Image (cartoon, rainbow over all chains, first blue to last red; front, side, top):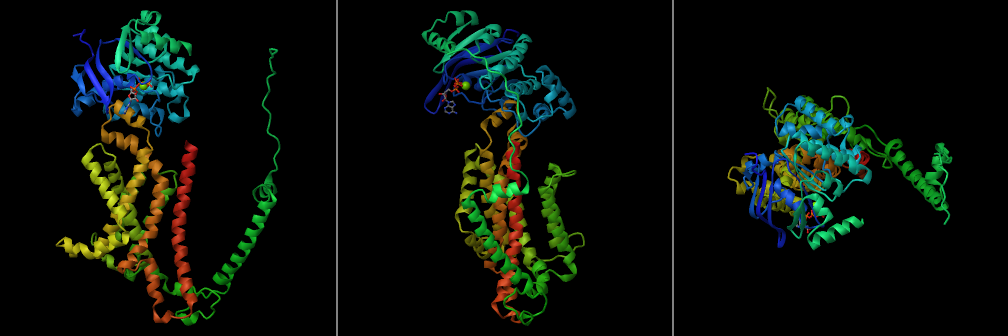
Length: 247
Length: 369
Ligand SMILES: Nc1ncnc2c1ncn2[C@@H]1O[C@H](COP(=O)(O)OP(=O)(O)OP(=O)(O)O)[C@@H](O)[C@H]1O
Ligand SMILES: [Mg+2]
């Protein structure tokens, strides 16, 4: 079934205490699709994508990832987490082990791959993100851009079918943003299914199939990147875009 | 404003500073008149105290003898009391012909400490873990015996420094794993486990240790039908490990809280199960962050061993006190002071060593960050 969506959100609702953070989210993502999610701070973008690998639990509605419905069943959660890679704004590399070991540990402990094989895989991904020469360093010795590329490689080592990116360039100095976006553009070209929370319009225009604009826990507007950025329809999106353009 | 292009400045070497020993002396001790005054005052105090220590402790001291009569000079220490009795202080009532077993215990203890303090060649995490588990086991085999043709020696015969170190070992090596488990339980998402651990910790921290020890030793037989059969020494050991594990748990909880939530999220995102996440990602970092506080707790555990005096055990301090009551050594008060000075020196040597170690670790982790 090539046309069956890999991610389905069906009327998903979530609350933090009394705070209604996700409201009736409906979303289908097809295999290979690239989705950019943007919106003001606090609109629920992170929460939305964190529901996909169950870092957050939703309370109402259905989320189906790769044919598996997300429930409290630990088996389901584990098998979904091994299909879904995630990269964070703050890199979250493991600081006490080397870059290479950061890439090996998941393959070895989750995929039960022998260490030597895992190291080989790790090196090919480090080469892909152009950082193989730093394999033996510790994460703290790398620049932010390098750390973020290692984090992407760490996710890719697990051979995920879906990649989630949560504002992965917003903690970076301007001159390092490009090296990380380039890696993501490459990945998009290879056909990875990607959900990307970002305000990088250039990136969105280049790779996104669809842009989702969120505000107050709901998806307000959905469009192709060109029309969305050139002529947003909702007032909220207009306001939001005028604000990020002024920066 | 005129547009301007400023010339590029090449790096230059820093201005000369007064260097060498004299320069260091001046900068550290004589940088201002106040600093100079403090330095001179301190020198005077050191001179006075040092003079007294040398006179009392060395020049006027009595080094050998077998009774109070050997220490006629009351202006000097009576080390004869120590030199005559040191075997008793170090080995307690352990049978003389089996002293070698105690020596093996001391040696293994020293090796274990070396493995944790230094890092060279064969010293790896694996070796340390092996030592951590192996040392208490080996200590039990050698000291208590009853296996491998080693004659059984009841812990009632332990005394002196041996008893102090055995209690410290039980306290430290028992409370670290227990404390770790309690800390994991307390931070667990499972409400029941978390509550049970929290109350357990709070109970042990809230009850005076003296009460706990007395309760265990005196009351346990009443609550547990066969409690009498559990050796009184063993009961004291269990109590000692139990309340110290509550403090260790708080040490480890602090370490766990120092780990940013991103580490948990990244571990989950790559699919690590709870135990793998804890074992490979969280605990290695949390334990490393806990070490300074952990060593501090070890220092208090070591000093707290003297609590067993209250239930009539003769630990290092206890056996010295007992010996002082020996009619042979009844006499002028300087025997008393010599004995306690000696005890203080020994306790201080151990605790100072530990605190030096924790300072070094702190510096090391500051550098690493
Ligand atoms: N664990 C939590 N407990 C309570 N409230 C939370 C929690 N996490 C997030 N929130 C709240 O939920 C709202 C949405 O948060 P979310 O992180 O999804 O926003 P976002 O769109 O990603 O914003 P940003 O652009 O700042 O990252 C915010 O108001 C936030 O304060
Ligand atoms: Mg966010």
